[in-house]
Every structure is written in C-alpha cells, then in structure tokens.
Image (cartoon, rainbow, N blue to C red; front, side, top):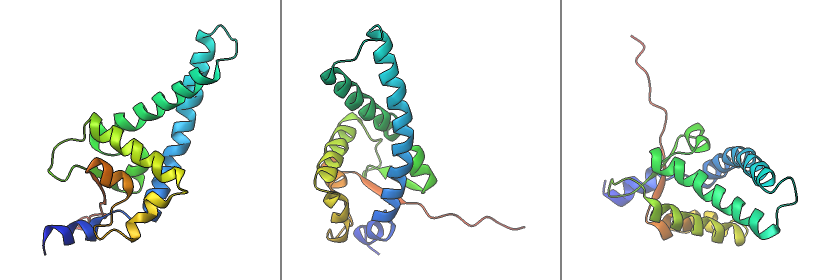
Amino acid sequence: MDNSELKIQHSAGVFRRFAAMAYDGLLLIAVLLLALAVALAVNGGDEVPRTIAQAVVALVAFLFFCFFWMRGGQTLGMQTWRLQLENPNGDAVNLKHCALRSLGALLSFATAGLGYFWIWFDRDNRAWPDILSGTQVVHRPKTKKNKD
C-alpha cells in the first residue's frame, strides 16, 4: 500500500470533523464569554466597542485552536472523536500551519461548509484547511486491549 492510500484510509470524515467542531464550539463559547467579560471589566463596565469585541473574539478563537493544535495536534473535541492534526512530514504543527488552517476554516464556513464537504471530491480526502496548511486530520481508531 503506498503512502496516499494510507492517508485516504485514515483520513477523518466530514461527520467526525463536524462532531468535533460542535464540541469545540461549546468550549470556545465559554472561553469567549470569559474573554468578553474581562474586556467589559477592563472597559470599566461600559459597552465594549464593536471593533474591539470582534478583535477579541477573533484573537481568542485563533489562540484557542493554536494552543491545542501546537500542543499535541488535538483540541478537546478532536480527542473525543479520536482525530489528530498532523504535519505529513512528522514535524510539529506551527503557527503558520495554524494561521493557514484558520483561514481555510473561515473560507469553508463562509461557503456554507463547502470547504469541509470538499473531502468527498478530493482524491486524498482533504478539506480546504488541510490543503491550505499542508496538514491533515486523521482518525485514530480505538486500539484493542489485551484481555489476559
């Protein structure tokens, strides 16, 4: 079996990716509420200007995903669904990969998810964030434990 067949066999599917995104979305909402509460407190309890609030949301969301991706290649949602973000050459995912994945995710959501459904058309089962960043999300099946 060549390397491309191996990638296709273990590439994460659309359902698993969206399920992990739903988990991560709930966690991210909690983190964003905390960040916006801090911004509100820093602003003396007055309304935070829209552009500042939008910048806080964008920065916190980016840092949330970068933290997990660079730390071990998995967000908490990805861990639950046994997904792993990998750099095909074996190096750790870096800030550039994170930035390009984030851009790919924005483009994917801006087109009603087309960038993720692209997996069904790509011969290597890659979504737009995978293609833009040169990384891949793979599914790690459960391993059987010895019953001795």
